[in-house]
Image (cartoon, rainbow, N blue to C red):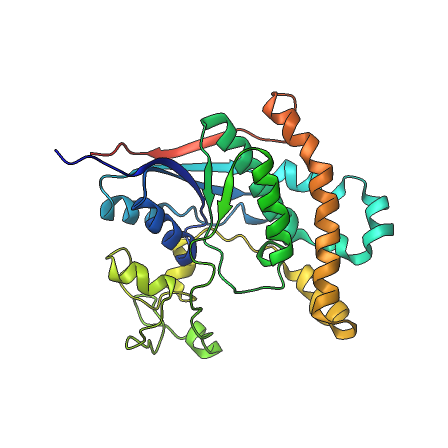
Amino acid sequence: MATDSRLESCVVLYSGGTDSTCAAAIEAERYRAVHLLTFEELATRNSPLPTANVERLRARFSTTSFYHVHISTDRLVRRLSYENYLQNIVKHGFFVLSTPGYSSLSWHLRTIQYCVQNNIRSVYDGMTRELTHLPGHMPAFRDEVTALYRRYGLTFSSPVLDWDVPHNQQLIDRLVVDRHGFALAPNEESTRQTTGRYLYERNVLPRPDVKGSLFDQQMQHDCYPFVVFNMFVFCNFLFRHNEKQYAQRIAALFRDKIAEASPWLDQALRGECSDFEAATVLSKTEST
């Protein structure tokens, strides 16, 4: 009998979208068990849970155990948003509106807790170089978070970070879709290394061009409460400052937020912090 030389287990931060599903598929070939963590807060509570793509992964990688875990970070996001609020307004100004960054940081804090409690040492996400104005997508933020993971003996990376990003669909393509929910005019001749093509070539998704389509929207958990934040970034700050200054301000804010939150994480690991809500295992499968 052939020996299974794969590593034991890993965690993937999992929205169910094309990018995080691609990351999960890549790691399913390297690990015997993949823990898919899907996070929820008040702003995303009515979004669909990404169960369909979890089942697609299970069907394709039948020798891999998948554990789909649902975690609420609502209380943690609220605390990240309002802890030392007046001091943060004085120091960081309107950057206290960085709600998407608080969401992202809450996911990483809860992931660290989950990994330590379950003796898992490797963490991945499906980050690409899209939406790079969002704090969680910015190199400075990810450097700070990576250092936080290292502090607890964990590694964190994205296997698709430098992959090609598909051309943005035109507005009409997002509004007019075929009855299957795919893009109106897919470019199936593309040979670019995209997450959608990777999943299509491995028989996980039915098309290589689903990103941004109705099909895509229905299969993933919405994790983008960023309307007010976008207004601040594009209509206020970047109207008067450059991107380097923006990156520096985001990095300064989240250095402070990580310093604030690190003691909470330590308390949670000792069972002393109620802001770290219990995780719910939605489904699990054992390898065959």
